[in-house]
Amino acid sequence: MRTGSRTLTALLVVLGFVFSLTGCGGGSTASNDSASPRAKLGTPSTKTLPAEFRVLAKHLALGMKPSRDNFRDDKEFTEIIAEGHSSILALSGIQSEDSDLTYVAAHGQAAFEESVSRLERINAMPKPPGVGSLLFESFIHGCYGNVYYSYALGVDADEKQKAIMEEVRGVLAAGDKADAAQMLLPNIAEKYAASPSDPDGRIVVDIDESWGSYGPNDWFCIYNAGSEDIEDCTIQVHLTGGNGQSRKNVHFVRHWPANSWMYARYEPGLEILDRPEAGKTTVSELQKAVVSIWSPRYTTTLTYAYQGAERDKDIAERCKDLKFRGRYQPFLSGMIWDTQRGAEFTLDGVANIPKCRVDITFREEGKSKAWHWEHDSWVKGEKKTFTPPRGGLAFDPSKIDMAISFPGTSYVHEVTLTVNE
Image (cartoon, rainbow, N blue to C red; front, side, top):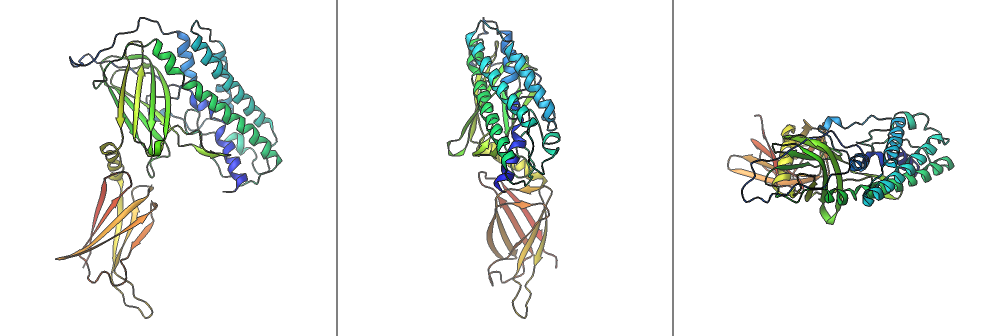
């Protein structure tokens, strides 16, 4: 993509950047009356959580909702701006005896004010040729969701675009300020929280990582397996990925019913101007997540390991829909060159699968020969041909086994093609 097109693409996705931090979902609850005798049980807090904290967390914490379907991808520019103003008004009204709370509210308010003012200036600016009304009528795909979806407009950079991009830089900086304010919420929540309890099965965590056609977002899922509701719950998720990547996300749930799930959608980020992963709220090659929960009656910390069995389970579930159409290619003698024995497989069932290794074994009674191939991706309807080296396969097989494996998981998807006589 050309530089001009990429920067305009950036504009389309950053307009909801700051506001994607907000919007805690409706609540759920939980408690466990059947904790084991050896489990460490915390003591409820004697301090009352300030009502102002609920307002602060509602507007700064990353969105968490009781259903994945509650995440919207269709909010328009005017709605995003209106919600920004709503956050400014809410944060500006916070008056608290807790100086930490007041401090965070002031910084969050400043971040929203900076972002809204720049977005309104962008809206009023003359637009580069070719952008038209598309830029401000249909581009926003999700406050509280996929705000990084974009359109490739293919418009070369000019002075108008440069002016817009300067404002975009300011929007990104404001987003960083709001993100930093979000990270301070646990410091406040901890002061009013119960003393720590052992998890003891009360909280269940599951993360669904983006993979092939299942994406581009990661999903954080958390289940309250107890018998009581949890009120005023601040949740911090500390993700660790490959190569030492790290990211903390903070959520707030006002009311969390017992025996119910809550969900958060983590974004992959996008290359914007000189930032390769602007707005990213996840990590690549997830290794583990340390989940900390603070509420006035229940506080705990647990570690979720994604490598190994957990990742294998997810990949196996996604591969349940994999289908292949196969055909054996017999040896054909030609005047100029021969067609070697081999196999053809066409992907069906899912839109695509990511980088994979394909092992093909040709079998006949008492005979077998195997080779492998590696592919960066495989899309639905794409036919891939697996032809051994010239003369490598000297017999016509009755069975052809295909085994597909993927980096980072021991799961192998197996298919057998019976060759018709």
